[in-house]
Length: 335
Image 1 (tube, rainbow, N blue to C red):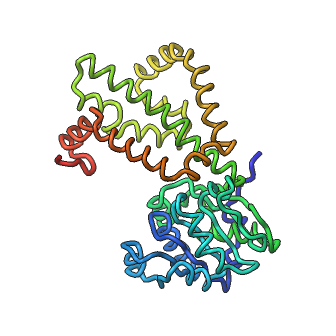
Image 2 (cartoon, one colour):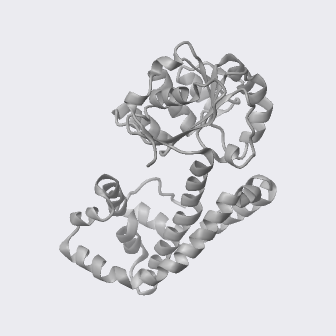
Image 3 (cartoon, helix red, strand yellow):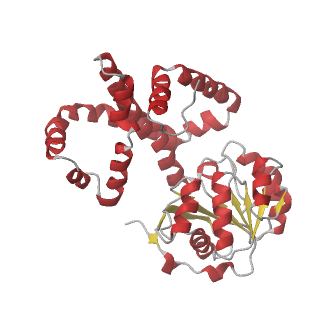
């Protein structure tokens, strides 16, 4: 069984007298800095001079260049994007840390795949929220918290675990629960969700849209039925609350019977899905994806830009814009 921690396993007093530097004031950085401060932990923000710098100042934080913030602090939360993190770590963070300082990563990616090699005198831990930045803040304010993956990668002081749990508690995560994971396992699960489960689910969705539109149903009606109404999102929330199969009880008897009796027609997809998802997982765990993405950024960036351009030309993008305008959903564009 995996080890799971809650509030009673953590002690905020462990952070008494310590100042933490939040490096990067984006969606996660802002929420985590605010949560730490509200929990009574002194925080200084390290950020370049941009809109995030101005927002941190407006939120009442002392905002310094990254190197200066790290030199001021006893621990640093590294919350800059994965693709720039190795350079920021090497040039601005690592030279300012001293033996016994704490380094907290919200993603295991760079450490797990050898792109960052923390100095041996540091406590290096993982506190990785399973929640977007806005949810990290909302969960704290509501009192419900949010789950996280946590783990000790390097224990130089003998106190890394208790310091890790204190940070998780200050963020509000131990209210919901923190499950212990290695950096490599956290990064692998995260990448697999993005590269295995997400694309497979997306293909099912796109196939259904294409089939129904070709059968003569209006695109707006198809998209509303499949996901734009919010019913799918609501059902997913109920899966979280009561379970994937038990949430079926919330649907009509017609729905339950149809799902149960027709579901078996798709069982022959299992072997193909497992094989293809397995290849994705193998690429991730071996470091093959990290080699492709992080060590050839220029080439990978060009591919990503072409994908974005192609995405905007897809029929479903136009259909979504039209449907969201018609039903006044979200930030539908007028173009």
